[in-house]
Image 1 (spheres, helix red, strand yellow):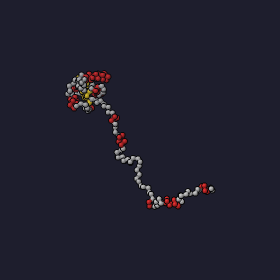
Image 2 (cartoon, one colour):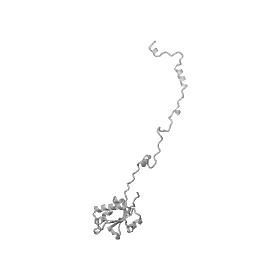
Image 3 (cartoon, one colour):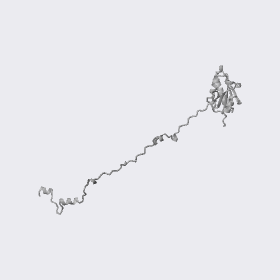
Image 4 (tube, helix red, strand yellow):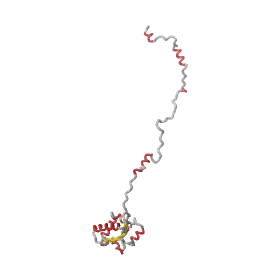
Length: 202
């Protein structure tokens, strides 16, 4: 057998020739028309992600609004209350005393429970005596006292200026309600009416 016969063996007996095979195949093929060509279907694109979010409303986003809230566990600490000073009638201050008692004290119509005379003392001695006097008389339950300071030269006496300051400073400021110049028959501007707080019940 030649080389050509080995590469292209003769057809087996009983097999159809090429023309017969071609005819059989063409019977199963549908004719192609341009009008029926396959076109990609137009479909709406839907993202695999979640649907578009609704645009935030005016007024800020939820986190911003939340940040403005103050947690109940972080409330602002209350402001420290400054102890109220005694009312000084000489400067027009009547805070902390009712109108009726203020008028009676200023007019010298309250009964004087105790008196102290600081006239002629040094500042250190007068301050020590004044503190002891106010504390003692307040503890005893007295309400109205007369403090004689003296007027000094030209009405510029040092005790006349310093005694009201001492009465409006701790520890005496916690015991005093009001301060007023005395009436002329009790010493005038050289003396002071002082109204004390009511003794607390134990």
